[in-house]
Amino acid sequence: MTRVGEPITRAPGPGSAGGHVLEVRDLRMRYGSKDVLKGVDFTASRGEVVALLGPNGAGKTTTIEILEGFRMRSGGSASVLGVDPAHGNEAWRARLGVVLQSWRDHGRFRVRDLLAHLGRYYAPYGTDQISRPWDTDQLIETVGLTEHAGKRIGRLSGGQRRRLDVAIGIVGKPELLFLDEPTAGFDPEARREFHDLVHRLADDDETTILLTTHDLDEAEKLADRILILADGRIIADGSADELSRLISGEAEIRWTRDGQRFVHLTTESTKFVHELFKQYGDEIGDLEVRRASLEDTYMTLVRQAEAGQATDAVREFTGEQA
Ligand SMILES: Nc1ncnc2c1ncn2[C@@H]1O[C@H](COP(=O)(O)OP(=O)(O)OP(=O)(O)O)[C@@H](O)[C@H]1O
Image (cartoon, rainbow, N blue to C red; front, side):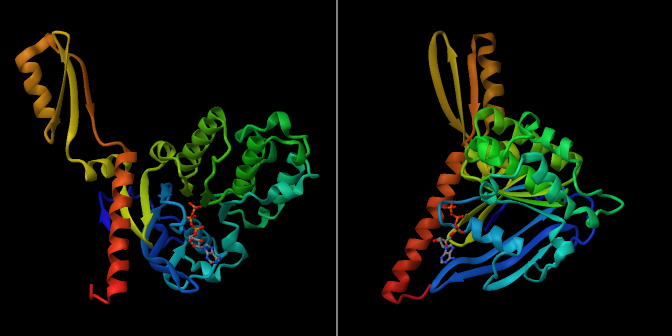
């Protein structure tokens, strides 16, 4: 795995493993004869927002479901809020938030009634530090459903239902929140409001958040750290900036002078720009320094991992030793 930088470390929370809310070591999952996870390793600290990226079928949902305790792993170890998710009890589950998409089956309930009802399950699990559940009306306001609080769920639009899914996920004031493609179906405004909410949960309440998304822009905006899952392993782990630098040490510098456009590739962008201004001063216009985008980085890393997988397949076919 390519590891860049150290995760942002905050004060350890109760029941967290060595300061880590999430600790995953050599996690393996096999469906039939197919190895989907071949040794996944990562950690997440309190208040960290971590995005899990990867191509379709990479095993993102599988990973999240194992950590939620909904799926048994084939091998490796996992610690979630200090507990093995395969043996989590009710009290442990009350400290987790899971955003599911199944609440559309409860179409006859009204928004406020459903949230108040679900919130009651969390009341016995409040602590001195965290009072559970959320106040229902405050929660409804936080997810932007105040106008629809009295509506039946069956009458909500797709985006409004998704906001409700998020409200249901956080109603118990989770210390760790799992979000599997949370903004699928959101319009740009709902997406922006959701991003604000995620930042508030992480910054104000120190909620740790693990999310999957196919939207690289969203991962870049939301996540303190991005994990790229491909070929059954985490192939890169770092902030968006760190990942971009990993792939391309070179920056592309563009500028204009005397009405002419110039482009230059360099690994020493600061020095180059300094020299440029020393030489031409005010004649320089439209200066732009561009690093590889997260998308460039993601595509390169995933292609490299897939090429490795193809090599493995050839080796397997020819019986050649690695
Ligand atoms: N219950 C199951 N039985 C057999 N194979 C499964 C099962 N669940 C998932 N898989 C397979 O495991 C692989 C990983 O699936 P998973 O849903 O975890 O991937 P993902 O990264 O979340 O994909 P996507 O981005 O498409 O949502 C896929 O090849 C999928 O077909």
